[in-house]
Length: 315
Length: 208
Image 1 (cartoon, each protein chain N blue to C red):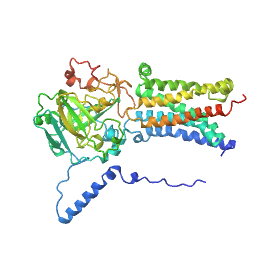
Image 2 (tube, rainbow over the protein chains, first blue to last red):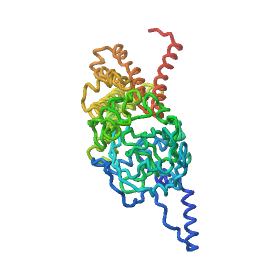
Image 3 (cartoon, each protein chain N blue to C red):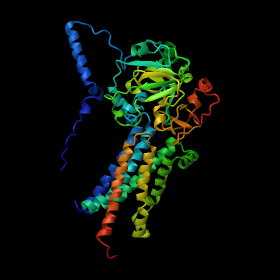
Image 4 (cartoon, helix red, strand yellow):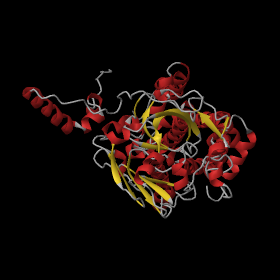
């Protein structure tokens, strides 16, 4: 005889991971709120966090006119290994990421090193930049980022003549990032650009997606976006920016140098050792029938940065 | 449990046939009815999922003989052909999704892939090696080949298993957890056979 027994309910089905991971914080803030309420103190305007709407955003002529992917697609299919290696992991696990308080230290070969609080970064005049995003795994999306050009940061810290490269160091929160327990990459995830690449008007620091603050799985609260390079060059959740003289070692380059070079410009003529880069799948399409363009279609703007370079060797 | 009636075996087979179709049914429902099941990259989901199931059915097929010997359930040997054919079936769907989604039937690009990229080479090789096994799966073929030759031919599965795991291992970008699990299961299943051979050789230098 078959006796039906309801399956055990896992704790994770009752309490979302994000809330569970922040339980102490939540209890604390609830307590503070109660105290404030009793004392009749206002808590002031809540700090805008993930999901909050951004103020009026300027359009940009650097945006593509292609149709952006849905918010759902962009935020449910992510590579953010600190939260797991499956594409669906970050949407689930990154809820735990602590995004406030947040500051980005800018230092190295600069005249005026300083830290930017996330509040400072949100004061830059924000633009919408609808960019193509080509992943090294041969799929692509169109994403409406909100942010500002990286060169605005540089202007404030004044790089010296010794600053030849920029290194981007991303968040490493051992208490919220379930993926960093595994030595899959060298944590913290580090990326880098040549200074002229970083200063290019297409290179932005993004703080938003569509009309809202950047979701955690997309790299909240602030991430780099370099649209003519494979997606992994655009580091998420940035905490430190260093202007340096020597070419920095990047995470994927350290992990598999024969597969991922420092430049990693989108290039249909340089295959990944394990798959062709000639075509791509524009999600959510089933078919990889879209021809990949040199520099992801931004050749007019960026090809001159690489004049005279052998891009087959410097991939 | 050791012995089942013919009727019971028939019923088990029907159940198994339907259960083994479930992964395919889920994918078809995902494509045509519930797109959210497959996420933002449905083609990748289908390729991965059919590859996973091909590998799983291959390992389940390889588990039949050890399970029969350890449990004494003679009848489960009768399920082996269907399990093996399901492994082949999911390999074919897996390959078809690669051919259509990733290469949009560009034969030249596919051949280049097979030649140039080791993980595709070994995956393709396991498909090719599975063909004669699938083709000789019928009773008629067993009779025609004779038990000894048939058994010899079907030992190819001991090559196909490692090739399939290697295909997965080399495909993975960085996180090897899953391929390691499959490799361990395969090692246990093949290791059991090696150990059995040794035991037989030691226990009896028997009358033939």
